Length: 231
Image (cartoon, rainbow, N blue to C red):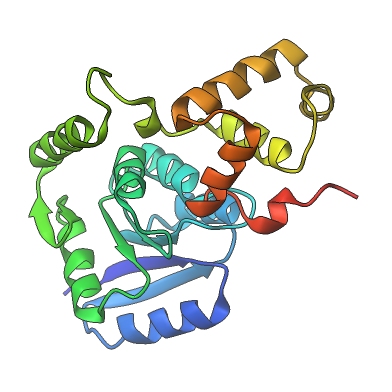
């Protein structure tokens, strides 16, 4: 019997070790790799082509939603399950839109996680313990948009994940960098920075940079250390 090959992505060694021990108690599962950094996760996934990636949201260098998007775009046969401490309805929507096949808080019971691992390798999705196919997931997303978006607003922008560049700019803005400073650091024009900031505020449905930074912190998109000014 071919074993399901798993990669764990989390920057807490103790959590990785505990997860590995739980997984490897199962005869059909094997942990092939562990990594603590978002960018390294993408590189390693493309090298080893795991069947499933168990992926934290709050990661160094690149958040888990960005990593999910990159991995699923380049490795269509690899399924991603997001495991995170940041559990809310909007976050689940962002994860599924980014390409995740399942999403669980880190306190998930082992049997539920093992069940999801086996399901996603079959091309299925697991949301709120329900097993869905692609068509059913699309219907679920449409239903969530209709339920959570304000009346009269077609396609609430809160459910449009930030691009990699927008996330990069948000990290700089969270440190207190001005548009001019961000433009200099990233070698782009100030108008481009301004346009990206406007897009970020619109997508997150917030009024200013401070609210955007708080939103991203609360959802684990940026880390607290990312908000510290560069020395």
